[in-house]
Image 1 (cartoon, protein in one colour):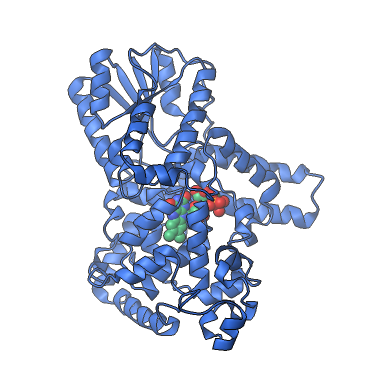
Image 2 (cartoon, rainbow, N blue to C red; image 1 turned 30 degrees about the horizontal axis):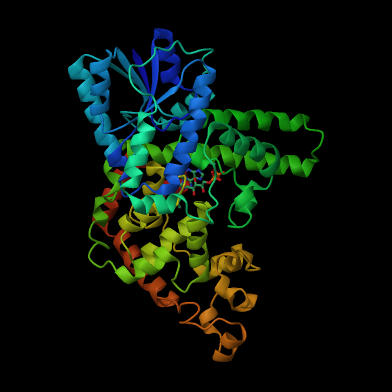
Length: 508
Ligand SMILES: Cc1cc2nc3c(=O)[nH]c(=O)nc-3n(C[C@H](O)[C@H](O)[C@H](O)COP(=O)(O)OP(=O)(O)OC[C@H]3O[C@@H](n4cnc5c(N)ncnc54)[C@H](O)[C@@H]3O)c2cc1C
């Protein structure tokens, strides 16, 4: 039998491993729940719910094509070894995964086992990420070539063999595993959560509605946590779980860009707005792969500074109570707390607010990025290790090749939520506080606190750090470090390895 091993590519279109295996015949489609991944510190119940829905959707697509999904449970390559004993495996077909450190090690084990067992293991590139890239110089043209190649159509049918095991065994083993992890069972049924639902059709619905209805003001809406909710595409979890491919999203956006000229429902201004928004959207699809490429080229950036000259900058002074307040959304900074609490409920927040959360942890609280990044990995439904750790390091100022940006939570509130609608939605204790006090409620007089039912220190916390003092101290420390000659030398090497050749900002 020829196995198609689904991982973070839960779709049937634009799927090279499936297309290639179908040509060989006797195909068995497999997904494996791996306990070490379920127990990892970056995996959370929200991911499992989305994964479950996406696997059900994939199974339905495979059944339409005459096959089905075999769901198994266990570590790899042991599971494959068991299957091989029951029925000889000729070949395994999968996408290259640029995932966390565990998946990196697991893929090495599988590769080794296949070699020792005489099984052909065919891995195909994932999206526009290049394995064994020799230089960053030509990366952008490689990416352009990838996204413009024809999309692989779904196979007309899948010549399947009946596998000699129970195709649902993995679901039962997963339930058993969950029973032994009651913490999970509670979180899986947590009321009040409003996460997106997984699956191929849902991914396409988000993409289509963005490209045809929601996306016209994308460039302006993307910064506000309120407007971005509908103004951004929201396709990120579907890309992260592979319900959609980058090429599919890119080519749909191209089709829409070309059709704008003939769209009689649009006036000149709307057409120009759509044009600019679609172009920004397509750039971000390239960023998606650009950031994942960094992790592909250096898997250790999940846990160590991409620029080793920054080692030791923050490691020795981690303040647990600051970290705890940040995780809970109880820092006394309304914009930080509202963003964090909205994340707890929805699993998503826009880019600017993610950057602000990471920057606040790194600069105002002077926390090393590793634990904050793991915490947010469990909160982001779209957690994508390559983007996540690269962005976290960038927003913490430890790459040496990016502009230092320290966000002011008060300014972000005034700029991005001037009426306080977002903040009041997620911080009920501030509902009666007038807009002029929202950015700094701790400055209200005792009388005002009583009047607006918000006693600082009782109903809502006082700021855990003083903005001005923390901001100035962090600015001084990070800039003096960045400008040291030995740091600049390593930064030049980091740029050679990871820097975007098209972004002037990163080059600077
Ligand atoms: C600290 C931090 C951590 C992040 N962690 C993740 C993560 O784990 N997973 C993730 O998908 N994105 C991450 N991002 C990037 C970005 O915030 C999200 O991709 C975006 O908010 C997802 O919403 P959307 O699909 O509506 O994006 P849109 O704005 O509609 O963009 C479309 C797609 O382009 C890609 N994209 C957009 N912005 C970026 C960016 N700045 N960098 C790389 N790719 C981008 C994403 O795949 C996104 O789905 C992170 C950003 C920061 C600052």
